[in-house]
Length: 245
Image (cartoon, rainbow, N blue to C red; front, side, top):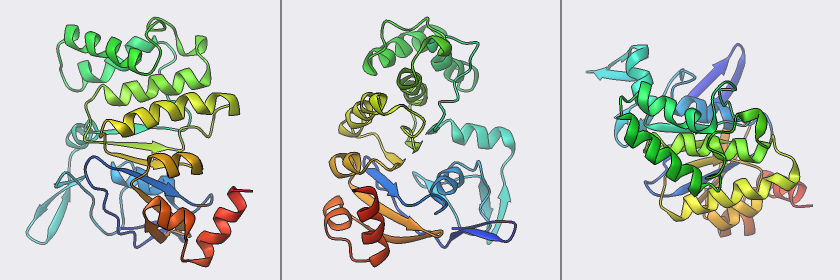
């Protein structure tokens, strides 16, 4: 995968496979291309070259012989419904309650029956520890609670894959733990996850694969023990020395 903005090459030949049911944690300094990588996976950004497949399905395009044809916006939105995305800043609809934020997409985008969707939403809110806040608006929730609603919203679509873009970076330090606890619980259930984060402890505990990126390239990848405890590349060692101080 290659991606350029203007004269800046943000992704310089990314080759990454995330196995079904595993957790891939992506580490790296700011500006290394981590968020762009996630946005390319669900076609929020178009790649300049390369292909993205999720569960064997080509994302954003159909292939005819050797040629690629971009899908319609409606077809792309349908694909995105199978790829959950949890953003840094929650992105909840402020005029909708927690319950309504979760039920909006399954009803409007997937056409699921309202009764089943609402039952599922209540289950998910309970799962993320917010069973008693279903009718609260985002302004009535802490940052950690809003992020947990955002996670429940992503799960409501029953996605094949969930992308997390630094899900704790906008939180006060004392709220980080509650969101990480939810991510750990998800990891234990076999949900396929790609998580961009600076939380080294989470990477060590929950990741099957740790990827270290720098300057638009994957510098190193492997198990947590390999990358975090015995990094082979000098750039990886320098990064970990800085964030683990």
